[in-house]
Length: 301
Length: 101
Image 1 (cartoon, chains in turn cyan, orange):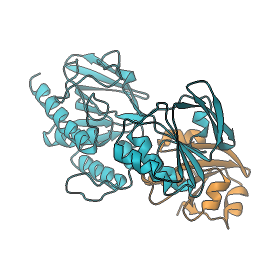
Image 2 (cartoon, each protein chain N blue to C red; image 1 turned 90 degrees about the vertical axis):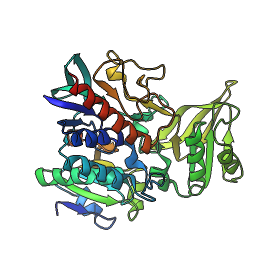
Image 3 (cartoon, each protein chain N blue to C red; image 1 turned 90 degrees about the horizontal axis):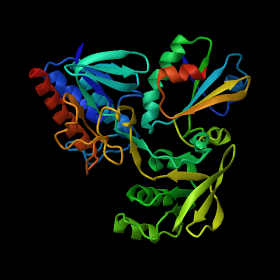
Image 4 (cartoon, helix red, strand yellow; image 1 turned 30 degrees about the vertical axis):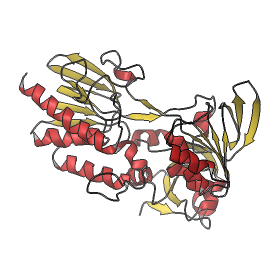
């Protein structure tokens, strides 16, 4: 039996592992994909204290090596369920099950899909969820961005420097995002904003060739495009734990800054927790807070 | 070196005319998930002698990337008898890549 099982090896989970190991607790970190979480997609981190410039990959690798050197065990399996037996909890993965005294859920979030029928098969064939990752493939081409938040605006602006033409499709008639980014985008000759519209179909021949856009009055038009960048928000990865852990309406774990969930001995850390600021530094902070809480819980068992 | 670096010049000989199935890893130096996937591919290449593993740098080989409709990396494409027989986009655990083969 482990003292603490941490689900998710992103910045929150791995920071929790560092704190828990330094408190001499045995730690198992379960991860479905690879260590690092979504930060590995960031080419250059510029807002983490003491690291003016560091790539997401390098950051993730350093934190992983730090946690592993302290003795945290990493197993690459997807956790699908938690069974609460009070002082003994079981985490079930796709391959095994592991017991522990306390659990920290740090599963983060993933990109929201549009939900169109052929969307999955076109990922990497014109459909993307990360402008900074895949923008380079569309140099001199036509791209469309769908979404109305800051990410969509920033993606569109970023793509204006690469693509010959950038459409931004937004379902409302105005942006609620950062005013500076909105005006910067409006000033770009290559950018065209299409308001009150949604993407209703993806047209393809081996790769994306165009999109069907429907406006709020039901008018349909086809736009030829080589790429579609989907920036319609993120969804937390908590559905698997919903029968045990209380979530908020959006699916985030209902836990405050103390990281406490509705179940004693189970904690929430990182982007999957209900919070206002989802940044690298707040994920790391959650890691520390949740680990301290778990250590205290175990000492009182 | 178990993973062969391929270019447009040797793609036909190394990939399309290979006797063994080929997994081509389209990647770039600036791509974080590609760097994560690299050791997994190297590990598989050492274990699986029945499959050939090659690496395609999309910055240098943008024609190959375009030809095979690669617009997100990392992208693994399986070739059998010179034809695409499957693909996987994004970071994947080793077990998922084995399933591709």
